[in-house]
Length: 93
Image 1 (cartoon, rainbow, N blue to C red):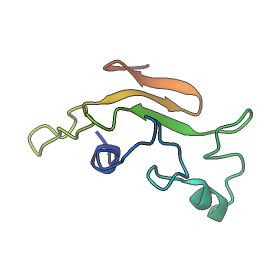
Image 2: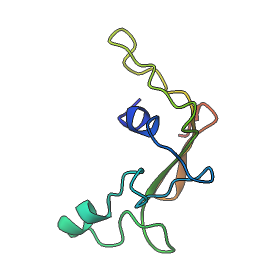
Image 3: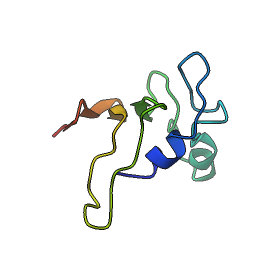
């Protein structure tokens, strides 16, 4: 689900890793600053950020109109504000 898979599939990772700010990954820091959201969208102690770990070679959006909540493939895990939200096909409570 979501808008990441279509964008992520187009990434060309260098050495297997793409970080926010590399020009390929979406960097939300400017948006957080515009809305004066302190300590947001930065990966550092005391800050809040969402992190998606995916395989750019296999990530794919499989949702359809008939199955709008189908889980995308190639997403390894999702962390929201440092807490695991999704891992290995399972949504955390």
